[in-house]
Each structure stands twice: as structure tokens, then as C-alpha cells.
Image (cartoon, rainbow over all chains, first blue to last red; front, top):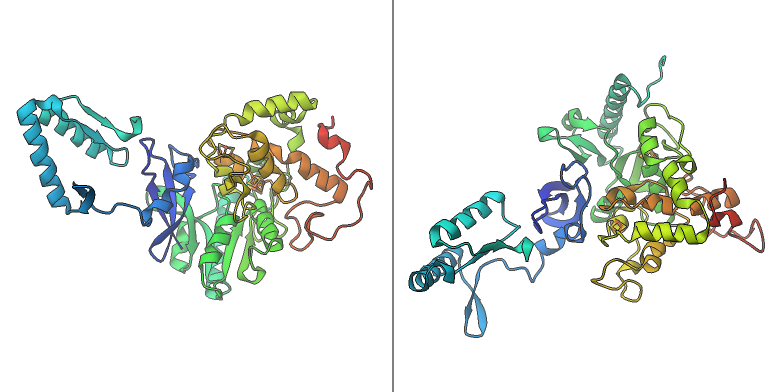
Length: 133
Length: 294
Ligand code: SF4
Ligand code: SF4
Ligand code: SF4
């Protein structure tokens, strides 16, 4: 048995949790009683955090919409496509024509960089994150 | 304190930890079990449950804080090969829960071994624990238990007439965010499927929960098996005193049926067993269950 300490990915509170891993598969979540934020408490999302990890519906690569369907593409292609489109729109209609939605599932530092990109790069305050939606 | 090793003093705790290490070492050397479930103080002094399998790991073994192990032990055994045997460092409530799991065919007795440790009186006070020790202690000495009915908070919740108590509980229970943490943490909550996930009883996606169909279903399902470990209450993010919800039924069982859940690995509760001798033929639930006896 292996208990892996990690942080709940669902919201910005960042509760500590322990994933029980059996043969490479996360099979259960336990609250971390020693975690300074959560102190052994979780909400229903935290308690079920192991369920999405290996879920067949989980997206594991970026998707691009072509016509009526989605197609998997690589991260490199996705980033390039997004940047080309966003820069194109911002160049033509101004920075306020674009916006960014970040995620509580990212680290503090990633979110900092993201808002920096939107604010300093596109010159707009159109930036928010999923935990406020 | 003489030669007594107890969980009260720093040296007492240290001695207990050292003695437990020696015991675990012996278990490992004699292959009495394949792993020993306990607490490990790892990198950055972070403590978490761990299954010890190597003697060199034992330096990191600690006994505190309280971390309920019974359910984890059951779950470990379920995903392990049939022949896998686990020893568990048990406080009183861990042992009681494991005994109840035996009776409900959730753990095979020959796959688990219990290393009994006592709790400190401080821990017993925090848990309002009547039996802060397992039936057999392998290290240390037992401290006396606490009478939960003497606690001011418990009195406040359980005293007075129906209407008053119902109002007070309704107030407390409406804080529930339906995280299912109480159900998930409770070592005795093992039903598959769980009634609390059945749309007939508990409506999906709505809070607060129905008190009758959520909290009281759980309370009654555990009425003859709650081992008063407090795991439910400790997992509750909104501080609902869930352990107190079980107290009246625990007391009724003890006083009328001479039965305390988990205190004996074999003797079954009046509900599970073939109990026929009603103490009071026309009334099996004593009147004082309905109010806290002064
Ligand atoms: S409930 Fe009793 S046995 Fe369990 S940790 Fe608390 S004091 Fe110890
Ligand atoms: S109901 Fe609470 S106190 Fe009772 S056995 Fe379950 S977790 Fe422990
Ligand atoms: S742990 Fe507390 S908040 Fe969560 S479901 Fe149980 S009573 Fe409700």
C-alpha cells in the first residue's frame, strides 16, 4: 500500500489529501489530518478526488473543434493555435476583445503567470478563474 | 509513577514508542504479518499512516496523533492478495471497530493482528472516551475513561424534552454540507450500496440534508455498532457533534442488554445475534433513552 500526499485539485482552498495507490491506480482518498489548511476535513469533491484520475471521460490531451466534432491535438499545436488566434483578434480589435479563464487546479505561480500574460501581454483585465464561476 | 509506562509524560510516551518499535521489529523478524500499519514521521516531520515492512523504517515510527486505522486496515486487506496478513497498531477504538468488522464479516480474523496501545487521559478527554484502551495492551498502561454524559456540551445536546432537543439538533445539523465525510470515515459504515446514496432517501444535489433521512438513517444504522471512535465527528468540516448523536443508543444497549459494541470479538449485538430475552417484554427501549437521566 502506498499513501501519496497531495493537494485537492478542485478549488483554491488547497486541502491536503492522501491518495491510496494500489498497483499504480488511485483507489481511495483520505483527508490529511496533519494538513494545516484542511486539518482532516474535506468536502464531497475532495473525498472523491481519486475518481476522476483514471476516469474514461477524463480529457488527457487538448481538443480542437473542427466542424461539429472535437479532435485531439498535441500541446505544442494547441498553444501555437491559441496564440495565433488570440494575437490575431487582439491585434485587430484590441486587447479587450480577448480574455482568459484560469483554474484553481493550477499552482499559484501558474496563475500569476497567466494573469500577467493577459494583463501585461494583451493589456486587458479580462481575467478570472474557475473557482469564482 | 514508579515503573509504570503511561502515555502521560514525555518519557512515558518515548518509552512506549521504543517498546512498540521493538514489538514491530519482532513481528517483522518472525514474519508474523506481512506489514504493520502505523504512523510514520517522514520528510519535513510530516506524519501519515504507513505500512511498515522493513526494520530500517522503524526509526520513523510514531504513535501520535490519533489517526483511526480500522477502516484503512479493512480497505488494505480488501485490495491485498488473500494470504496477505496485516498487523495494526490499535488504540481502544481501533480494536473495537475491528471486532465489529469481524462480526460483520468484513475482516477475516486470521488476516489481522492487533498491537494494543493505550491513550493518554488528555486524548480520552478530547474523545469523551469511556474506554481509552484496547482489551489487551501490548505496551504502556491504561488510563481511566471519561463519562461522556458528564460533559457540558453533551448535556446541552441531550437534555430536556423532545421538542427542545429536536430544535437544538435541527440547528446543529442544518450546518451539514453533505460531504459524506462522516460516512466515509466511520469504520462501521461499510454497506454497499449505501442508503445515503439512494435517491429514495437522500435527494441528490440538495443541501441542507433532510435530518430524518440522512443523519438519522446513519445514526440508526450504527445504533448497535458505534464504537465511539469519534472519526465521524473529527471528519466533519462544520463541527457537528456526531458522536453525541449515538450516545443514548449506546447507553440503552449497555444498560438494558449488557452490550458494548466492540468490547468483545465474538459476542454479537442484540440485533445481529439471536437474542430472545427482552429485558422488559413490552418495552425494549427504556424510557430514559428519550431524555437524559439526571
Ligand atoms: S476514542 Fe478512546 S480509544 Fe479512541 S483515540 Fe479516543 S481516547 Fe483513544
Ligand atoms: S458513528 Fe462515529 S463514533 Fe461511531 S463508530 Fe462511526 S465514526 Fe466512530
Ligand atoms: S461530515 Fe458533517 S458536513 Fe459532512 S455529511 Fe457528515 S454531518 Fe454533514
